[in-house]
Length: 309
Image 1 (cartoon, one colour):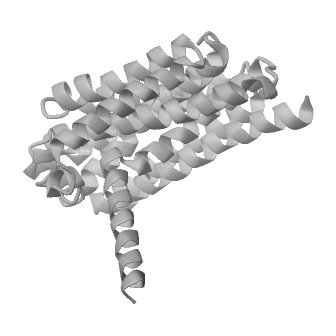
Image 2 (cartoon, one colour):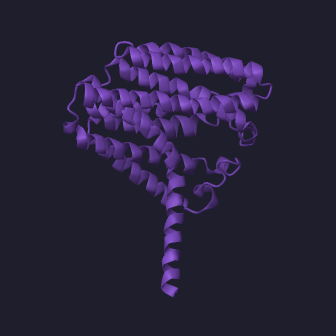
Image 3 (cartoon, one colour):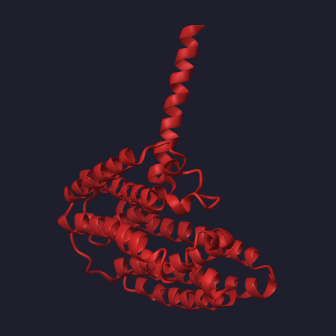
């Protein structure tokens, strides 16, 4: 019985440690960013008619490197933001706030992941490693340290690092960023982040206000956020045509999803007097939008690689 009890205690300890590490490096964000990275990677293989059997190791290094770099960015963000995280309901349980992981350990974890991640990406192409470093740098310095607490344009600054994954995937396979298709993936993901995070900011308005983070709806109000959301959704719809040189099908899927988001924003705002309901509607659609769009790119690419060629 003592042996069984010991084994159970050790298992629970390992599960707790795994959960602490997962929250520290933000595994949810890592997983959501690996999808666009893989979309850029597979689209590059298809576009340039690359033999996938020659890129197995590069694909593995791209996945590992991206995982580590994104995890490092999340860790550094958790360390720097632990004072405001303690104020906000959705973040006050993070290990860097509760003390379940000490700051020195978290710092070394972030450094180790950053170094190993960039090295792993360098095994694919130098450009992929540079992009991995830039994504990490933009998230930690210009966004987390310089703009998040100072300006309503923090979301725009943070969107640069958030849109790096498809570039990394593409560069890992080709070593270049010359095709308009990868520009489409990058620009779409940059613009996508504004209405997505505006919706979160409206739903968490009181928390951001308490933490004194100048999100757009906190500083300028919901009406201004509604207008700016629609401006970005119009721009997002126009970016659909960047897919046209590559595929009419991808262009139509992107256009349908983007215009649908714009229509939903306008209709939902007029119908719902409760701004939180409108924001929740847009937030849910943003997740569906990104899932469908990048999944379509991946499926399109894989079909082209393994079936049509």
